[in-house]
Image (cartoon, rainbow, N blue to C red; front, top):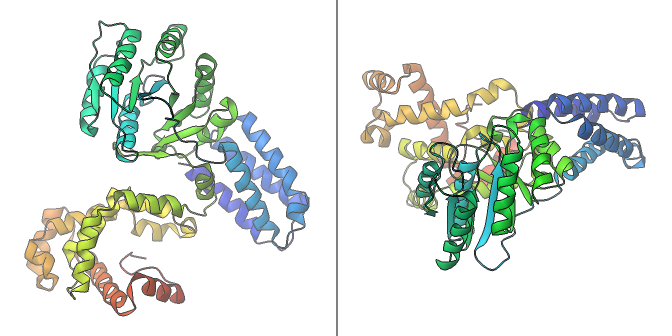
Length: 455
């Protein structure tokens, strides 16, 4: 998300930060670029105009022009205003009520409501250790009820059955009552969507809301619909007392206009963003972290949290013990590192969160892409256990067999082996230099990146 906007803004501010002094003229030119960048990112005209005016007002004041580093001061102002525009801080779910805490999920058809219900249930179960029950009050869309039942089963939460012959209001009431009787912590009610906002849809969802009195009423919206997302959020907010918004499909949205417009237009916080199809691909929305990423400053906090959640600690400990015993890093270990990286959303997702990665040349970025990671795993999977443990045995005939089995060329196998040898050397150096901290200090002094990254 925000790739286009991020590139434009970083280019604009790179020119500013290179100037020793700034004038009102410099700032006006930069703000013109910012305005175009926001509009191209599908941010509404109303939001763009107000944002640019606020930044310009602060930028031409003593805060920037009186600064010793005016270029950096402008970037700081833009970052602060981006945060303010998106809500300043993460606004989590409010579950402080007598159980079960009821969450009503509404939105248009095709926005990803049912999948979001499953992701939300999974997040509450795994992160917050809550018992969760889900139900579908969507009696119109074919197989909607069955879809939610399947999703609930995949994440291991209870499903309250319903049928297309029942009344949606009764389904919701019965589910909440069942949740109370069975001592569930949270009940999530999925409602019907339409292809567009209409009176019938609004009337039904109002009745459901009135019947179950949810503590959270979330509007699910497809981020790729841009300004339409903000407009439909406003329509639902006028009909329902929304408590927050969930933006879906942000991994496929290069513009990101919805994220910058919704809070301003509805006054309601974005609570979560969908970042992929997997059931664990729902993340809390942090405006400060996202503003940082847009401006190329990275998002190390989110990366650390992702490592905590998704890295298999048992396998990591096993690898650590292997090194302690003096055993060599082999191709099976290398493959395991690649798989762990994929579990975290791939190299692209990781690099997006690291500061300064936006400044790397495209040729360098291409060499560490997710395509290369998948190719590496495929090549190693085509090897025998003996070959993975003892890569020195890999000669011409074996390499041809491995290339054929993985759908690659012999030169791809050679390239992988070269990267692996660099990685192996790095692991040996790490042990000699006192672990990861010592190695990182050494690399910092050399101004380089880790070997094996193909840079």
